[in-house]
Length: 414
Image 1: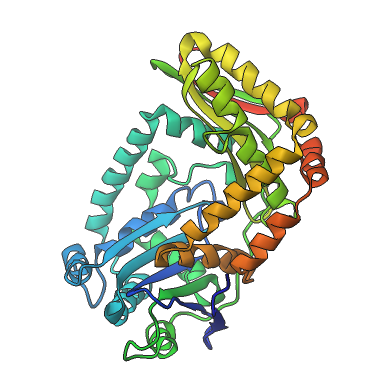
Image 2: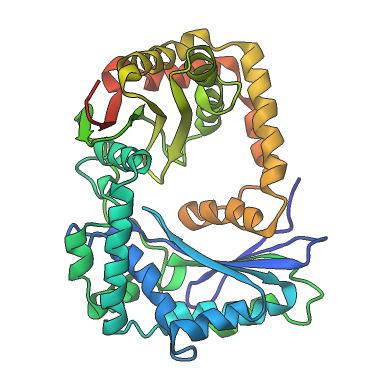
C-alpha cells in the first residue's frame, strides 16, 4: 500500500506535502509547525499552547472569533488544533471543493492573527481553568507527572500547558515574537490529503498563494536536547478513590531502527485486550479497570511505560505485578506472541489510513520532524522483518530494574 506523495518546498522554505486519495470526497488541510513546549524557556512555559488558542481570536480578514468560526462552519467543515512538546498543529477537514477556503482561513490565522490584548486576558482565564481541570483529573495528572519525572532537567520535562504564573505572564508582544521566531520557512509544513485532483484548482498554486508570503527560514533545530532525569519515584498526594500510577523506563528516539521491535513488545505487554497485563491484572485478579502500555518516541528521546488505575488497597500488589511483567518480558517473549502481535499491528494500519485525517497524520509527523517520507509498505516490511532476537535485545537493553521510574497519584504512595 503506497500513496502518490509529493513532497516539495516553496521559495521561502515552507514545506508542502500533498497526498491524493482516490475514492474520497473530502480533504484534510493540516498545518504543522515544528515548535512546542520543548522550545520554550522556563519563563515562556505554555506559550506555544497559548498561541494555539489565540490565533482563533481573529485575523486581518476574519476580524473576530465568530467570523473565523462562521467561515468554517458555513461550509460544514471541521476545525481544530493541538499543541505537543515538539510541534503544533492546525487542521480543517472539508468537502474537496472548499479547500481554497480552508487554506485561506489557515494562512490568515498563522500569518495575520490579531492577538488582541483583551482577548488574551480572557483566554488566559480559560487556560487556567484548563490547568485546574487537568489537576482534578488524576489519570491525566499521572501521565503528565511521569513525563516530568522521566525528562526532569530538560524542557521535555515541563507541562505543555505551562503554569498559571507563566500563562498569566504571556503578552501579545511575546506571542508575536514567538510566532516570528518559529512560524516561518522550513519550520512550517502544509499537508493536503484527500481529493486534490479533479477539483477545479491546483493545490500547489493555492499553497503558494496562501503561504508564499510567510517569513523565510530553514528547518530549525530544537533549542536543547532531550535528557533523562535521575529521580526514580514521585508521589503526587491527592485524595482520590482510586490510585493512578505510571511505571516505565527510558526508551528510544523516533530515529532508532529498533522502534518496531519495541512497539511489538509493548502490544504484548499491555497494548491490547489480549495482552499479558490486561489478562493478569484485570481479567484474572480484577485489580484495575484500566491498564495499558505505550511507547512514546520523540526526536531524540522516548520512553516505554505502563499506566493503571487501581483500588487504593490494591496499589502495592498491582505495581509489583506490573514491574515483574516488565522485567520478565524479554526472557519470556515467544515466537507465537511475535507472530500474533505482527498481525495485530499490521491489521491496524489500514484502519489508520481509511480517512484523510489518518493519512495526513501518518505522513506529516515524520516529514515535519525528520524531513523524510515513509510509505505504509515500508512500515509493513519493517514490522515483518522483526525477529524474536530483535525484541529480546531491545528489551534486555532498556528494561532494567534500576532504570524503572514510577509516579503515583493518590492518597498514598504504595
